[in-house]
Length: 417
Image (cartoon, rainbow, N blue to C red):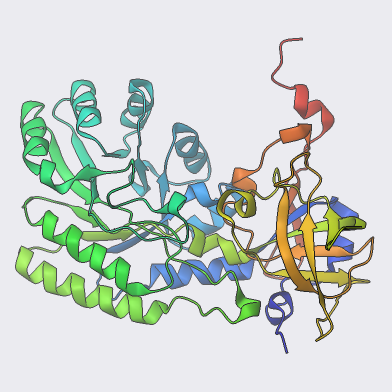
């Protein structure tokens, strides 16, 4: 029998999905503070090495109230744009707690980070020259392509032979030449092999490769192993979670061994994003139509890909729960496959294809599990649809509105009328 995620974790606290939809509208992003804090603790305590920092990758979800909780739990943060830097600073992160991992950015973007005293990671030789011209004599980090990539989809593999990211290891000589030319001090190196791994081995192998490269630079202050920590999106199908204890033990052993040979204790970092926020988020929506088109049963909802992009972009799986009259509708052996679709004028607007689910009625509420990462942050106003509200179920089980739903007026806000 399926153990439903929201029941196991009392996800909605003192409320039912029906009550939340009635109060805040549909669709609706719901986050659970207790789960968020627990995930932060797991990452903060990943390794036993004393000089270890877990830096939340804010591109996964940049809601400022969630960022405040993440900072309160003692995590640092990574930014990928000036906008993310700006929001992180507003959330209370100090400049020294933010790492700007840049990719193909303008001089203006680099200058913004420099002026805010934020360490920048550079991922190409040409951009390293640009940085040297802007901040001669400054400190800098570089992103390395370790030659090892991993991920659930080709679009999220960020290392290896087919990626736009990172400086190749064979370019080490050119890196040193640029550093010397502009009197730059290399204080850190980092990499990111890809996203959503559930086997620790590729991450450990990538870390070994990065540490081997780090031996060429005797004055580093930190090494950042990147992120990509996966979560089991198909829990209902028996998918197992990443063994965090095994990963932490192997990484700790590797760090201690390398530090001994390196001759000094430096800081080590990771960049979890998805792992921190994915499981603390559930996306609620409403069923508005049911139809049979030839052999396919379509369940029409208000969860279009403007609200959740991952299934369309990555063919990503999300477990689904159905609620009626405030309770979960249980599955049974007689469940028939249905295709869950949204309200966007695109044939590809499919949330779940031929999924066996309990009988669904118009008016039911659908819950999309593990929607806290790359959900709202990738949402849009495509078809001039309104982006949903976001609420937080606090530690006591009570809901708080942390971002209001778009209004029609918001669609015209930036036009010159």
